[in-house]
Amino acid sequence: MAVELTGIQGVGHVQPREGESLAKGRFEFSDILQCYLICFGLFGQQAMVIAATGLGIDTRVFTVPARGLLSVVALTVLVYLILKSKRSVLNLSFLSFTLFWGAYGLRVALELSSRVDVVQEAGRFTGGYIATMAFGACFLPGLAILVNGSWRLRGLTRNLAILLTGGTGAAMIYFYGGHLLNFQNRMSSGQVVGEVTTIHPLALGYLGSVLCLFALYTFACRNASLLLRSCIGVALAAVGVFLLVGSASRGPVVALAVVYFVLLISKTRRLDFGRVFFLGMLFVVLAVGVVMLVRFTGSTVLDRLLYTGHLLSPGSGGATRLNLFQQALDRFVESPVIGSGFTLRSVEGTDMYPHNLILESLMATGLLGTVPLMILIFMGFAASWRILTRDPEMSWIPLLYVHFLTGSMFSGAIYSNVELWLALAATLSCDAWLRKKSAEEKESVEYEV
Image (cartoon, rainbow, N blue to C red; front, side, top):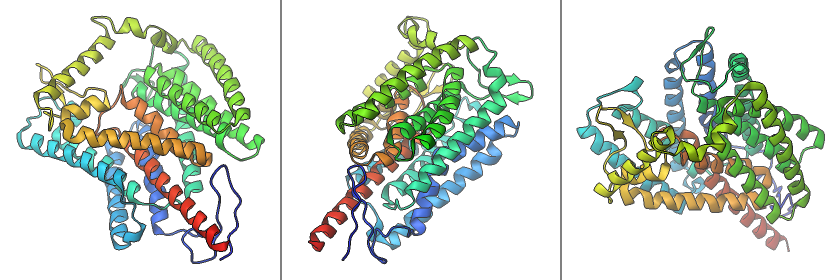
């Protein structure tokens, strides 16, 4: 068997003959579905919500059918893989994923059998909403991505993801740009500006930080020409920084900072000192740009970061977040094995989640679900490191996982953090595919010799 090795950044590229499993340019039905689940699941739904909000259309007209379609595609993938079991990725990550969601499903069943929805808050905290989001938007698509070891369309998937994110960022500036240039604090969710109803500042911030993430990836990991990388990277960074500063949210800034340092460490590990130096210079340029933009727009993002310690003092909003953490721990202590509930309910009947993935897991699933969750998280770290150090062209996937995992430590809920579950599943699936690909290459070389 003739094999051509071109050795791209630590992982050789194989071009087998037609009919072999890794044939270049050939893809199957599962590859198309994988591309759709990742692109639409991670970024397509958000783009629809932002477009609908900016146009003044009820978002549920789009989001409900979109989630239904995502679930149908995920089920299609699972059925396809059952029929072609040799293409399924069934390993410890699959077991941990199903065990965690099995424990969460047990909690959902227990809650639905006894729960009374006191305050519905536009339906966000009802048992039915939590159940459909958890299993229709997180579990099924995540499981389908995880077990689908098809990454032949990885280049198209990456390009579509960047295109969707960039287009959404441009739409955000189109709808809200004037407001972002004339505010002295931060955008408020639901505020009417002219004929536009604004969205939550966290949505602005996390979209901005993802755009900056893609800019870092483009500069530091792509093998394209310097001119192309510069054009794409500068455009993504410009829109991303604008939204990041405009949101004045701390979480997206912290998540982006963690991504930056993980990328910097991985480049150092690869002894790629040229790009390490470039990342250092880029940090200086971005820092100066952020400070200038803050002064120009009146954003309080730097004040909020610098006075985080003060915000944790008694009576502040930060102290309220700490109170939620303590309440979640108290609920865990009540039932440490299987948990005691998936929301925190106040005396007035208002529901809230703890704003921390691990504490929420302890509260909702106890040790039964948190142990496999921790295994998943650490497997995600290991997979991320392998991809970052062996195949940088694919590193946008683990960088997204690190980004959304960091954000989940102080924002979002298990059932609504769709991006985290899909990014985690994609990271584990991609790592399994790359390891299988590397093993096939090694076997091919040995056979040729």
